[in-house]
Length: 433
Image 1 (cartoon, helix red, strand yellow):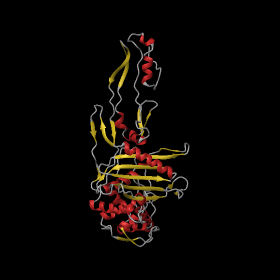
Image 2: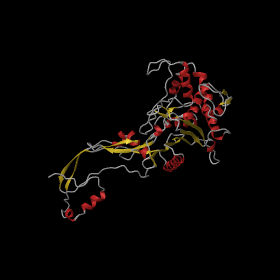
Image 3: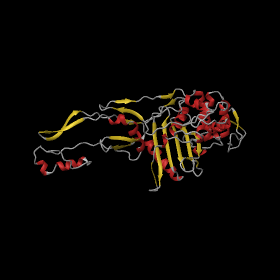
Image 4: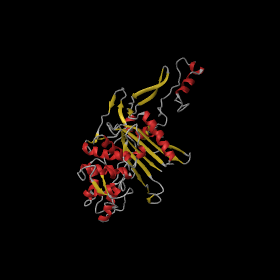
């Protein structure tokens, strides 16, 4: 007198096989057997971009399926749709669904991922992590003109299996960036008239507790970036912000540095840069100018800040894009239940972020990092394509055990774009080993 479930979460092939049994066939079209459809997540390209696409879970009580990672989580309200309402009624042909309120399908999502580029990025990131016994790594490729994320990969070493596996999406998690911050600081300096030419010079002798590993003396802006001079970039920033260190963060804020990306990637966070006020806003303790100066110098070259790789990449992309700060995104279009596409337009966080002249100056400095005589990324030289960008290293901070920098490990970063002459793609790689 009521429905009885005889199988659950079985493939449709099982239903068709049971339906063909002689007993059910003898009922002459009055088969009591029916089924409900249950949609499952299928990854047609295997593990490629699997974390960015996301995962789903079924609620134990409601049986509703929602996303808990990646696009599935970030766009759950668009993907889920609206439930309908139906009941079982007896028909001449047996029990059937009587729909009182039809369900509404959610949107289909068309991503920006390029499968060929994604395949290359995943393979190369795995190879590199394995070669240096890395703890984890993340890599992103973005199209300069549009901000479309063409590839994004995250891997982590699993001690249980001894292999690298799909990891949390660290591309949108905040870390101390190290020297990849220097070109961003220099961009501000050019834009604000602190320095005017790539050939302007600055004293690179030891300053604020740091020294230039490539030697001190006077260096041009090109050489400061080429050799990754901590004292050099710190002294440049001090020309404007030494009397009011808190203004450095305010300048970053004016450039949209802390605005949410809304990239479509689940778990996205924003940068964290302490405001160097005379009184600590958390503890209420007064801070000496000496302490604020030390922190200002560190912020200028990438310490005492935490920036997600996606944010760092977006600024390098703006430099490659002649100063136009395009919004990174993983979704190209939404497709409705009727099959109609809504293509999402390219949007800008700041247009422009800086002048085209400023972007060109920073671009020239980044060229020297790869192609200069003392560049820190000379190994990237390749006669097939002109890559330019900036390297960066930083000790990871251990918040749990040491509560200080863990000098047994390092984070290695590279941010840049290619080809130099007419940039098409920008890239960011961050590896902890």
